[in-house]
Length: 350
Image (cartoon, rainbow, N blue to C red):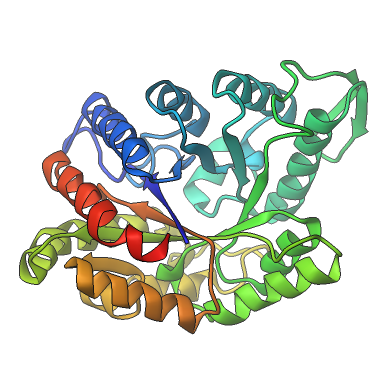
């Protein structure tokens, strides 16, 4: 199993400036690269403390490329619904060059109604925009002199520059929550899948669906699964819980607030049962997340056993992407946690 670091800003100007947040993130990025964390990832969200400090993950990952030597740089994820594929393909090629071929590109549909509303994009266009945008970016990266006539974007005889450093392009990932068809599609197309245990769902079944689709499509190997977890490691079990409890509860509250439109009247056939998913998340707490294995919080010995048990229960996965400075968890605590986890937990999975 590989371990990466994920940055999901969950603060607003009244809590921490963007300057200070990203300074902390770059410090932890450089630290993690030196300690053997294999990837750095961040999100694309807008307008709300839940993710809003990161409207363009490629910008942060460019800065991360300057302070790392080995770690892969992963968008977690870019949103085709709000991006022109011509611009996105060019930016991907540029960062792949700057990072000397260390970029991997995760794509997601987006799921927050307030973002769709502010961009003037219909929720019911989510799937179509995602599939069209991702396919256009793929072709622009893999081919030259590309012409496409889509529902939302059209272009003729385009060769995107810069050309990708990796051949034929950076690896792709697809973000999926709890819909089996999303996992099936990622496997069938030969992409990695990013998922989030915190939302619940039958993760073992969903990963099984992904791997079966991967195999049925004739791709080599078994695919790649990346799961996201909140992580705080401390030599004291009691202190670990005391430090992580309030920031994790605040993170959950912010997520539910950002997605509250789903329980306040928004609906779309592209997002079945999202009202129930968000209502379920509203009931989650630090304790419930920790118990179900979505939050890795504790002393090293506890975390080693927890990770082994969770990995076995879902049939195995390849990458754990760890949120290490969620909400207002301090740089000093995140620094110590990242160091201790690398020293006392990661060697058990190498």
